[in-house]
Amino acid sequence: MGVPMVRITLNQVYAVRDQWSLSASGTFNEGVHLVSGDVGSGKSTLALMMAGLLPLSGGSIEKTGITSGMLSLQFPELHVTGLSVAEECTSWGVDPCKILEAIGLTEKKDISPLSLSRGELTQLHLACVLAKDYDLLLLDEPFSSLDCEEKVKLCARIGQKSQGITIIFTHEQNILPRVTRIWEIVDGTLVDCGTPPNAFQHWHHVPSVIEKLTALGSRPDNISLDDLREAACRIQG
Amino acid sequence: MITAEFLCYRNLAIDALSIKPGITTIIGANGSGKTTFLKLCAGIAVPDSGTLLIDDALPRETETGWVNEFPDRNILFVNVFDEIASPLRFRRIPCDEIDSNVRACAETMGITHLLKRAERELSGGEKVLVSLAAALVHHPKVLVLDEYDSHLDARSLAKIEQGIRTAGADYVIRCTQQMDTAIQSDYLLFIDSGRITHAGTPDLVFPILKDTAYYPVVWGCRWSESH
Image 1 (cartoon, rainbow over the protein chains, first blue to last red):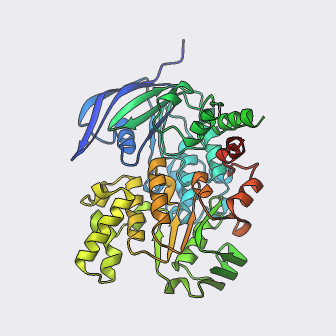
Image 2: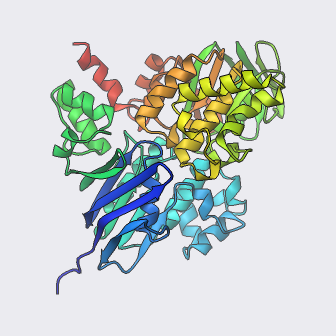
Image 3: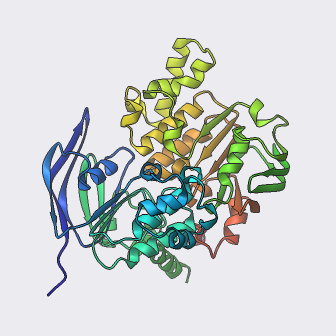
């Protein structure tokens, strides 16, 4: 028996608010997807709609083979329910000792999660989210506030996921995981840019470092830091 | 000059530091003390011991604009216009002057279309842009920005970088995890566990960080571009 296929399909989904609108069509198959877009373009709105937390103004979303899902909100403070860092871990159904040791926050287990720095709170939140496997994982700005080393660790963790759909909504430009497909929101419409590296040609929000490397004759194969470094090494010899 | 001597507060300890006018960016790990240092510069916190002076004055005696790392914590008012106007209204500036200053600032930040919106309807990035406008609108001497760029796209960042440079603040002190932002600084401070371990221009500091995730790939391309 084969592994069940997972898929989420957006059928002419749209959201409308005053003069602002977003329309989205496309199929997200298993793998890691990146969704980019300008401030206020509708990335978080799309994430909320895909999670079923925001009603659609029109269209439909079809989920196939998805039995578990998680939306990590842009603002980790909105997830907090525990009075202490350890309680916060428990509220996610994970072992505080194991999680806090992994992210180096054991000494802060008794303080309020809201007393952590924003980066530490994001680390805590993502460690709790990523402790479980979900068929559909929606990560809204997961890199925001993480330090560069932690961004690299998060990329590695996402890269270890062997199944399911992971969709990353982000502005991050430099430290990203390898992705299966790139999407972007342009002028109120979700656009499928395709798979890297060919996607770079059509991607309005292509990171400047990829543009620079390509202009220097060394187009990276994908968008991960390793891919960028490898492309830079090809130039520098 | 911003000067610190034998400064101690929470996990932060700085024996001696001088920061010239311009844009200074602080980088380092989560929890290393970046926000703590920014709060001292903004006068939100006062040192347990030692001194921090801005042109020989205490931070609390200095005109300062501040943007919090938690976008929701910057917001005081219901709608965007009132939020940006608030620093001017607190100073009892004439209404027509407030109106023109708010609109000019919103234009610079590219958020004129948001002026009538309720803040609760804004995206995370839009909230940061509004907070930045509110911090800039009264032309502070010191602008303190805590990871303001973590919710902004590259185009917005390029636009507001220009706005920050032309706002007239003598000192911009900011922290970031975006090395593209750090590159555009006059001065970099790298903080590790509450201590400043590297300080200097990007040309001096980035080569020291070459084997770390803080070293921007684009920095390594500069040599290739020039040859």
